Length: 307
Image (cartoon, rainbow, N blue to C red):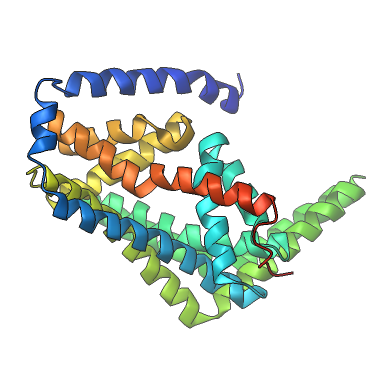
């Protein structure tokens, strides 16, 4: 069975397991009291952090994108928010691929700029994840390996060009030429954006801020229900949520996101409510907003795109 088929088969199972776990975590009799006694000030703070997270993530993409082609922040933000909806109805990878088309301009330049921004966030999450889990040396080693890859990406580029030449030599010329053209356009964008040291450094800082805001967003949602979630525990819960959602294949990670968070902060009525509200504020609400933006963009609602 192919990996994609296996993942589709396991997704309903992961979703059902998550629902059962969440159901068992909630005491229905306690739920009205927990909601009634909630402090809404921390929820407002968490909501503001979620908005900052989206704006900064879109800004990160825009800062890189404008180095490689003409770009509009408004259009970049619209494409980014639309991505939440697209990844709810499509596999995450296809969702990312589709939302890039919405920013306009050269598709492969735009895609390479998005990929560079995502790569910086993945580096930070993986590295901090290893360090927080107690693998400090391995985490630092991983940072070194990945940064080396960023520095010596020219070598990987040459390997890919050699691969395309091999395809041409064995008679697959048409496919090779198309792939080579796509690759060179994407790599030229990646290279041009990466060569701007200031933008590259700012991209890393934004990626770090995005992660910190998400972690503290969970802490503040917990405070609304009188939970004292330590930063280390909140980061672990955030990490588990990302891992579970990535592996499950469930659209938007609904259910498995919350399962990952509960594994990180514990299981109770308050933590279950915290997990759901946190994911709603930082993800699910943008899937709804993203749907509205996406279909308005398709209908020609906003022609402010670069070409």
